[in-house]
Image (cartoon, rainbow, N blue to C red; front, side, top):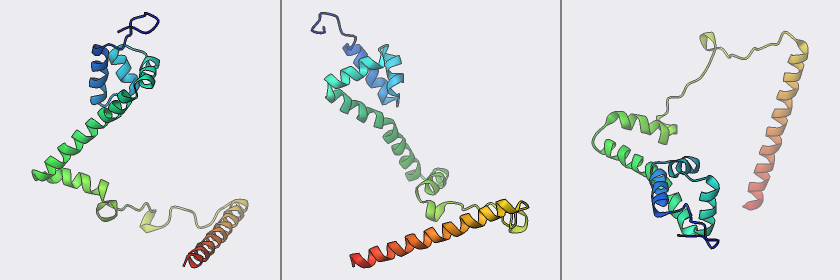
Length: 150
């Protein structure tokens, strides 16, 4: 294959096959270009001229994730309890995630109840007051909006 200017293209069938294989193995564009021995600009220009290749590339990049899902599903179907225990907290955080609270000694708050520096204590109090005011104002607006929509 040659470009209109007569220069042979580097995007040969062999190069395209190398790119496909790299993308099927979850390679980034840069990694695939390295594997195919082409520049990223060459790949991007080819994609502009061949939008069907870009569509295929995006599908190829999804292949590894899909195969991983198949493997996980197969492991669970085969009774692998460890995979089930690993997956549920990731997918069903609300019901299966171990909740952790970070607290001080005897369950006390890690935040100081008082500040040694009065300027810091005053700034914290002002911030808390502004935060309460903001939350109150936002809540009021939300209720008014919901009432107006009814």
